[in-house]
Amino acid sequence: MSKLGKFLGHSEEVEVQGEKLFITPLKVKDLKLFMGKEESTQEEQMEMSKEIIKKSLLEEEITDEEIDSMKTEAFMEIMDAINKVNGFTNEKIDRIRKATRPTV
Image (tube, rainbow, N blue to C red; front, side, top):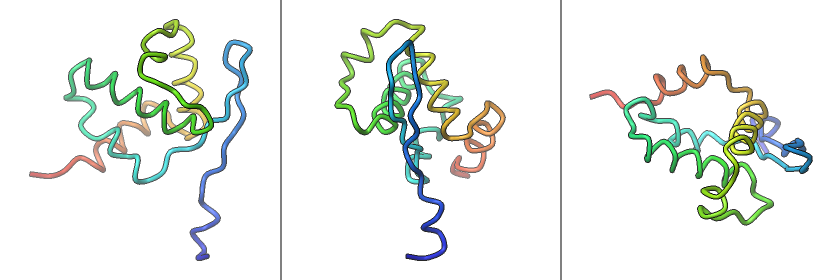
């Protein structure tokens, strides 16, 4: 394995509303989930959020229906935990979007 092997993400255990979840950091190939997000419709943003949750909670078999039925508070806490595990802040997400946005 090359030196980059040490940068592979490892799952972190977090607690959301008393439930322990293992969140796996996103990978470079998952950055496409953030591409063009500013120009996306609310429906497209929600679909991207669902994909982020599914990719982050690999140990669970999560369906769109489960996500759609969640309490809003739990959904936001999970998204906050995912952002924290990935080291994302709004500023960093904005930089990722700008860096990965295709130029025309």
